[in-house]
Amino acid sequence: MLWLSELGNRLKQAREERKLSLDDLQAITKIQKRYLLGIEEGNYGMMPGNFYVRAFIKQYAEAVGLDPEKLFDEYKNEIPIVHTEETIELSRVKTHKELPKSASKVLEFLPRILIIAVVILAAVIIWITVQNKPDSSGQADQPKQTSSGENEYDAIESPEEPEPKETDTGSAPPAEEDKPAEEKPAEPASEVVFKETAGRKAVYELTKAEQFKLDVTSSGTTWIEIRNASGKKFFSGMLNKGKTESHDFTNETEAFIVIGNASAAQIKVNGKPVEYKIDPKKTVRQDMQIVYTKE
Image (tube, rainbow, N blue to C red; front, side):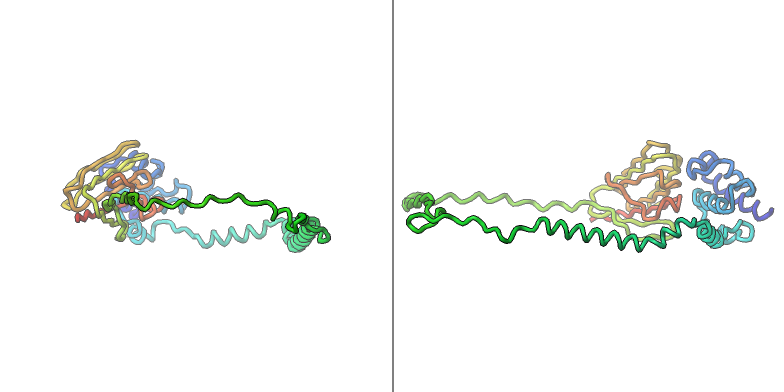
């Protein structure tokens, strides 16, 4: 079909412009290579269902830098539609019909069972309280009276406290306590502050920092691009598992990072992780802009 062929060619062209093979795209999106090829050829019948067709197209588009929403709108007459509401309603009806009779009987008698349990618990608490109540007829032992009329506790004399000795007025005054050394105020720690999101790009600001050290580490396989405000590329290509790209942006004003598979990459500034503000599980590709403000 013409429209499907145009969509596949458009996605394939975007992939080739980024110099990504189908194997590279499979590593980024975690979608099997045969499904990626099916998308490019417009062969949707080989896929598990309409939901997966739309999900795979969305991940493919994000990985190669295209807006999936625009693609869905442009090719809405050809891309399969998922009837989510009908599926949910059918699932609810089936669940109610399959409820066993035994479960219904248990639900019917549940309030009575709870009332009986509460009554038994109250009876146990009352019984324990009565058993532990002290005998009111018993009297506490009274102290014995001595022959002098004092009780035995009063007759015991407390040891005399020694009288305080007078200090020698002629002695030297006590030395002044050492004053603690004045602490210097701690220098404010550098921090990366989230500012806003613009589309799929998250904007951050680095302040109170004498340097700007950027580290990008991959825990899987992902495509990375790092550039400055003028568009100069510091790195562009695949970053394999366990590899780190480190760059000094102290003399720059901004850093731009594009991550093809965000869930497999960690960003650090001056050794501190920078959190994604857009869920990487929902959006495979992430664009970040870090503005360096020198004070």
